[in-house]
Amino acid sequence: MMLKNNATSASTAAAARGRSQLRCHAALAPFKGLAVQAAGGKFQPYEYEPKPLGPTEIEIKVTHNGLCHSDLHMRDDDWGITSFPLIAGKGAGPPRHEVVGEVAAKGDTVAGIEVGDRVGYGWLRDSCRKCRYCLRGEENLCLQQTPTIVGRSQQQCRTDVITGCSESLPAVAATPGLPLFVFAAGAFAYKIPDALGSAEAAPMLCAGITVYAPLRKHTRRPGMSVAVLGVGGLGHLAVQFAAAMGADVTALVRDDDEAGEALALGAREAATSARAFEEKKGSYDVVLNCASARLDFAKVLGLLCPDGVLIQVGIPGGGAEITLPLQDVVFSQKSLAGSIEMLEFAVAKGVKPMIETYKLSQINEAAARVASGRARYRVVMETDEI
Image (tube, rainbow, N blue to C red; front, side, top):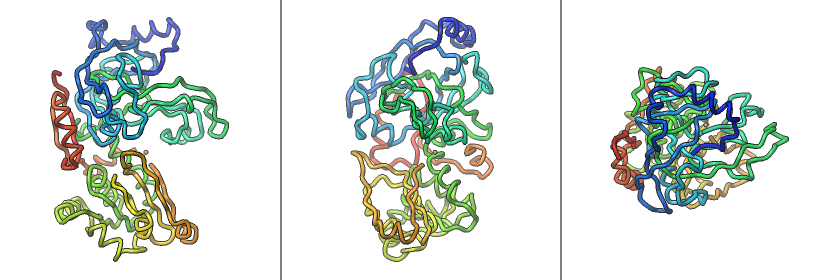
């Protein structure tokens, strides 16, 4: 389920002694969850034996998890990186990446998190913690990072002179499942503020941080003009965050219904993207593209004023290539930026996702809802019997 256990038997024993009574009585019981056995398949119940809890790991009893398009892309192998079938006890796990739950056990070197704490766990599962990116708090840029549901290829498991990753980590495969208990690196789990409900917190761990991080970086002063392209699962949070940061927000939407919702969420203006491409050229300091549809990026880039930044966070299925007009990039100093403190900011500013909740046993119904594009705006699963 997690990284290969390279700890000594003494370390393993020490970690075992650190386990909570919440799991000790059932330590020999298999973990239960849901798994997909082939691309495009249904989620089905499965059981597997977990490896021993490592000294730096925590065990989370999952109560809520978000379900997003990334999960469906992995289910359907749209990106060509999913491993099938899921083999119990192997692979990257936990494939959930918007996890909220209770700490059931902890390794004896984990600091700052205690058994019983309510924590969240997101897209990033681990990193080298030594390179220049990790040391300045940008672990999402680490070349040795392990995304929760994607795993890490052998090609990434190497010494990297440029970034300073000095130790190779073992390769791990991606496994598209939904376990009821997950192991997580304690350093990458976050306590959930009391003012934020578990169902609302779950989508913030992927969708929330995906839009918050680049906005925080590129919305450098109040009053900057920010266009959010696509007001869906990502975009409805982007509108709220950008407005809370003091930006002058325009939502680029598909129809009047989306326009009304965007204005209610804090946008000053809403316009269809087709109209904006014609009438709003050169108008925005930042364009945050949350759409997963294939677009004419020359038109998207044309929305930017000189020295503007296009932030791309939506990823189409089936792979995607972007064609950009280099003359516009070079002579107008326009740039393309990719994305990953946010929960406390969300609580302070009242930023919350709009969610639909399903029981975990309704996973296939929920997945169909996400795939249809009709969910408003994030789907959250509540753990029940499966």
